[in-house]
Length: 260
Image 1: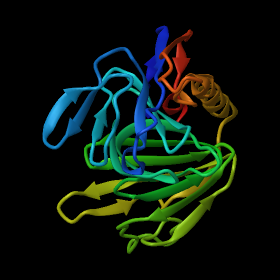
Image 2: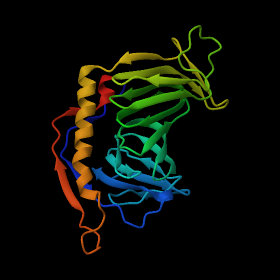
Image 3: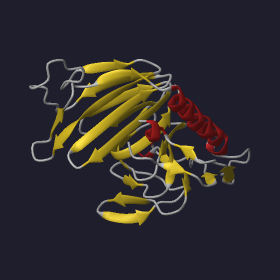
């Protein structure tokens, strides 16, 4: 996987969720660093900033930034640099995101499930820390679904396994990814036929390396540090609380994809 190193002081601006956010728009940018990420909305491209409300149909393009997004009620997703993530649907209980390319790390909370979809299939996740990576080199793709300590099930999309003797991932087949393991699928995607063809066997389950698991835990801890800044959107007098600036130092940290 391509390295996504973060070697700067990550200034995280935790902004509270507005009390009037509807279930259909229950997502907000909690943090962004450095500036420069984009959101594509209705054919228009705009700069993305901490505090922005996300809508269904938005596509986040992080470019060189790391972006943290709140979905449901307190579940956070960190989207790493050089990633594109579409917001398919949002509600108080479930969020559906489309990982177009790149890497994300999520930490779900009770009562909020997350589905991460792509051309290979869909990962349904609840109650734990997870990571999803999609690396593309031309038509060649590598998808990794990592389950640190939650409940993760992956269901294959339009997958052609006609030339595969033993297929773990198949169209419509649900595969459970145990805690502490990752599912890896390699193959090629044909945009003309909208078919993903796996190579080297249709998927494999392996144990998450210890250093990668440590990095995922560190990322989850950093997201936990953000939660008090935006949970509980109003003060005792009913007025919105003031956003909190949180600075988390990084020391040449490697993201999970460096170990992929």
